[in-house]
Image (tube, rainbow, N blue to C red; front, side, top):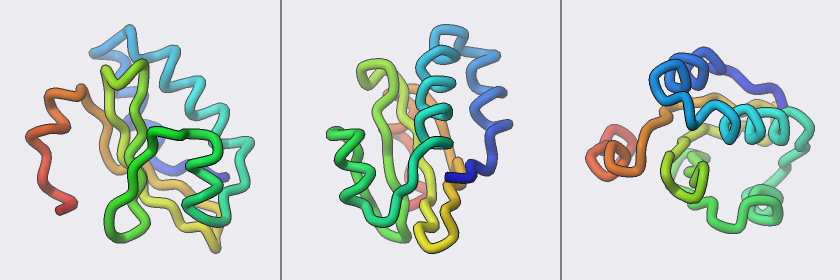
Length: 96
Protein backbone atom coordinates (compact mmCIF):
# COMPACT_ATOMS: atom_id res chain seq x y z
CA UNK A 1 0.00 0.00 0.00
CA UNK A 2 1.09 3.54 -0.59
CA UNK A 3 0.93 5.50 2.67
CA UNK A 4 0.18 9.21 2.61
CA UNK A 5 0.50 11.58 5.58
CA UNK A 6 3.53 9.90 7.14
CA UNK A 7 4.59 13.30 8.50
CA UNK A 8 1.71 13.04 11.00
CA UNK A 9 3.31 9.91 12.45
CA UNK A 10 6.72 11.53 12.57
CA UNK A 11 5.39 14.63 14.33
CA UNK A 12 3.59 12.47 16.85
CA UNK A 13 6.50 10.24 17.78
CA UNK A 14 8.79 13.24 18.16
CA UNK A 15 6.55 14.15 21.11
CA UNK A 16 5.87 10.55 22.19
CA UNK A 17 9.16 8.71 21.76
CA UNK A 18 7.75 5.37 22.98
CA UNK A 19 5.38 5.37 19.99
CA UNK A 20 8.18 5.51 17.41
CA UNK A 21 9.00 1.79 17.23
CA UNK A 22 5.41 0.56 17.13
CA UNK A 23 4.36 3.20 14.56
CA UNK A 24 7.35 2.48 12.34
CA UNK A 25 6.58 -1.26 12.54
CA UNK A 26 2.95 -0.57 11.56
CA UNK A 27 4.13 1.62 8.67
CA UNK A 28 6.55 -1.03 7.37
CA UNK A 29 3.82 -3.67 7.55
CA UNK A 30 1.28 -1.53 5.71
CA UNK A 31 3.74 -0.64 2.95
CA UNK A 32 4.12 -4.37 2.25
CA UNK A 33 0.37 -5.06 2.48
CA UNK A 34 -2.10 -5.35 -0.39
CA UNK A 35 -5.45 -4.67 1.23
CA UNK A 36 -8.46 -5.16 -1.03
CA UNK A 37 -11.16 -5.32 1.66
CA UNK A 38 -11.61 -4.57 5.37
CA UNK A 39 -11.27 -8.31 5.99
CA UNK A 40 -7.70 -8.14 4.69
CA UNK A 41 -6.97 -5.62 7.44
CA UNK A 42 -8.72 -7.75 10.08
CA UNK A 43 -6.65 -10.77 9.03
CA UNK A 44 -3.51 -8.95 10.14
CA UNK A 45 -4.95 -6.64 12.81
CA UNK A 46 -7.62 -8.45 14.80
CA UNK A 47 -8.39 -5.41 16.96
CA UNK A 48 -8.81 -2.98 14.06
CA UNK A 49 -12.17 -1.18 13.99
CA UNK A 50 -14.00 0.37 11.08
CA UNK A 51 -16.23 3.41 10.83
CA UNK A 52 -17.87 5.19 7.91
CA UNK A 53 -15.97 6.34 4.86
CA UNK A 54 -13.44 3.49 4.77
CA UNK A 55 -11.85 4.71 8.01
CA UNK A 56 -9.95 2.09 9.97
CA UNK A 57 -8.85 2.53 13.58
CA UNK A 58 -5.74 0.70 14.79
CA UNK A 59 -4.64 0.05 18.35
CA UNK A 60 -0.92 0.74 18.63
CA UNK A 61 1.39 -0.47 21.40
CA UNK A 62 -1.19 -2.45 23.31
CA UNK A 63 -3.87 0.21 22.81
CA UNK A 64 -1.71 2.94 24.33
CA UNK A 65 -2.08 4.85 21.07
CA UNK A 66 -4.75 5.00 18.40
CA UNK A 67 -4.26 5.56 14.70
CA UNK A 68 -7.02 6.36 12.22
CA UNK A 69 -6.56 6.02 8.50
CA UNK A 70 -8.67 6.25 5.37
CA UNK A 71 -8.16 3.26 3.10
CA UNK A 72 -8.74 3.60 -0.62
CA UNK A 73 -8.70 -0.08 -1.53
CA UNK A 74 -9.12 0.43 -5.30
CA UNK A 75 -6.07 2.71 -5.44
CA UNK A 76 -3.91 0.85 -2.91
CA UNK A 77 -3.61 3.95 -0.73
CA UNK A 78 -3.77 4.60 2.99
CA UNK A 79 -4.11 8.19 4.22
CA UNK A 80 -3.12 8.79 7.83
CA UNK A 81 -5.85 10.96 9.33
CA UNK A 82 -4.98 11.12 13.01
CA UNK A 83 -2.71 9.59 15.63
CA UNK A 84 -2.87 10.15 19.36
CA UNK A 85 -3.05 8.61 22.79
CA UNK A 86 -5.97 6.45 23.78
CA UNK A 87 -7.17 9.23 26.12
CA UNK A 88 -7.05 11.77 23.29
CA UNK A 89 -8.95 9.40 21.01
CA UNK A 90 -11.82 9.24 23.49
CA UNK A 91 -12.26 13.01 23.01
CA UNK A 92 -11.98 13.11 19.20
CA UNK A 93 -15.25 13.38 17.31
CA UNK A 94 -14.21 14.84 13.96
CA UNK A 95 -15.00 11.68 12.00
CA UNK A 96 -18.32 10.82 13.62
